[in-house]
Image (cartoon, rainbow, N blue to C red; front, top):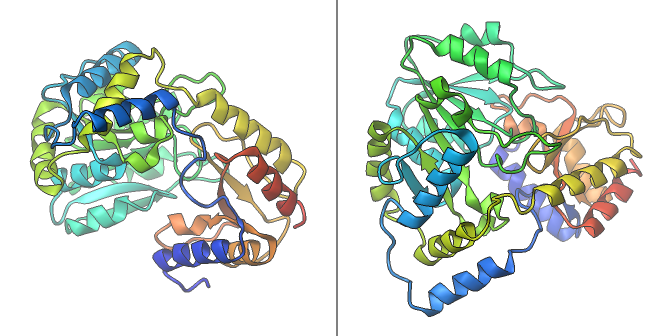
Length: 375
């Protein structure tokens, strides 16, 4: 099992989970239902014949709402006409941003463990990913070591906060370190904030937009699909200064041209009628706390998640198996599907950790915890 590629491993775990009817804690989405009024609005726009192409940059009303939200929450102005683009999910925004900014021979710093989308997009441009490992168990950054990675070829740094897969949030002091490191350079930041609306324990919503000197060199990527629990709608957005957005829109136009019109209209209707963009934050926090209380009765060790809906579990008290073999046995013999953390490292480093998703209904969490307690 350990010798399979990441893609094959994901397919294998999915197949085993289906065959064994395992509780699926490995997939990347929650089980929360769509808000009824959002669904009603979508159906209305489809029925009204709003099924043509949207403007390539996105429906203006939705872009304007995003601009107002960033002005209100983060005190930063983005021009909806020239600095905001609606995308087919966060992944498309990430790929488009990377394709717009880097060229062959450039270097891009990637914090590991890392979401799987970044490296293929970098390598497709003929650029080189430079990997920097976060320090477990808190997955903090050694900024002295990080500084040594920056060269004349460094073009881009990818941040992901809240972090997938660890659920950690980069603290203010870390971002201040980064700001000092980048002063006087032309290095850009790609800030993947797909889970930024799912932050717990009364922490403020995260965005690099809170840090003006970093924001001015950043491309910010967000996900409305994740925030509103409709990930299958594949709807995201990208924010950037106008000169950078011009480049992004050139690639965006020829990559997908435009994004689903009735979905954009429905989201604009919904968001214009709600003061909060965070309808599920409390529910996710309650689900996190509930699952943590169940996990406390097992032999796994873990830190509380700060954001997102993934939990890292350490199984050193249970087994000396590789994380791949452990996950295989977990699904095959115990009926719980999880991902080995090594999937999120380019060199498949094994730290006896797995990733599970707690954004499931309580029945599934109860059953999963019962099975995990048997290990």
